[in-house]
Structure formats: structure tokens, C-alpha cells
Length: 145
Image (tube, rainbow, N blue to C red; front, side, top):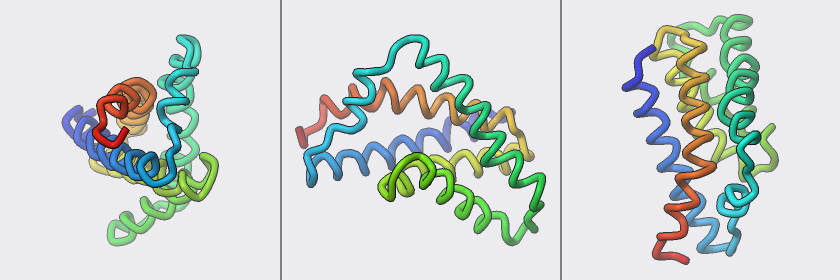
């Protein structure tokens, strides 16, 4: 498992989602991430950062790649396609972008680390932790609030 790839992908995904959330808050006055973070309990954190990544990475990375085995030249399109489905199944069309970016990051880590399921799970768990706890703190410091 290459930790640098995990940290890089999660960092990019969190940054993009953070900017996206700032734009949503600025234009539509929604506090989606902050409200979510205020409601997270310790047992939910274990679910969010442990069990959810294990399940979702099996469904959205491991299973599709094992079933369809995309060619090297089609892997990027496959990552994007799976990420769109990943985002869409998280709720609404808004999630296609936010969770879709995260899905692209997890797919990139999965491929970059040699089809490593554990790398994708680690990236997903770290991302969920950062989105649940770090982003709300950053949003409270935002100039747009």
C-alpha cells in the first residue's frame, strides 16, 4: 500500500469538495457538511470510517474491476463511470459531483497502488474522517460565512 498515493488522492478530493461546499453555501446558504458533522456520534464514526469504506469499496471498486476487467486505455473512463454511479447513489445530483470526485480519487488509488482494495478502503476511510470532522472546522473559518 503506497501511503503517498492515498494522501495525495484524499487531499485533492477533500480540497475539491471543500471548494464545492463553499460555493453551495455561498450561493444557496446551505450548511450541509456542518450539519452532518454536528450529528456524528462516536459509533457512527466507526461505521463511517471503517465499515462503510470496506463495503463501498468492495461494491464500487473491487467488484466492477474484477467483473469487467477494463483495458488499460479504458481505465480512466471506467473510473469516471463508476464514480458517477458512486456519487449518484449517495443521494442526489449534487452528490454526483462531490462524491463522484471522491470516487475518482478512490479509483485512482485503487489502480495506482496495483488494484489494491486495502488502499482504496484506507483512502475512503481517511476521506470520510476528513469530511466529517476537518471540513466543518475549515468551513467555520471560511471568509464566506
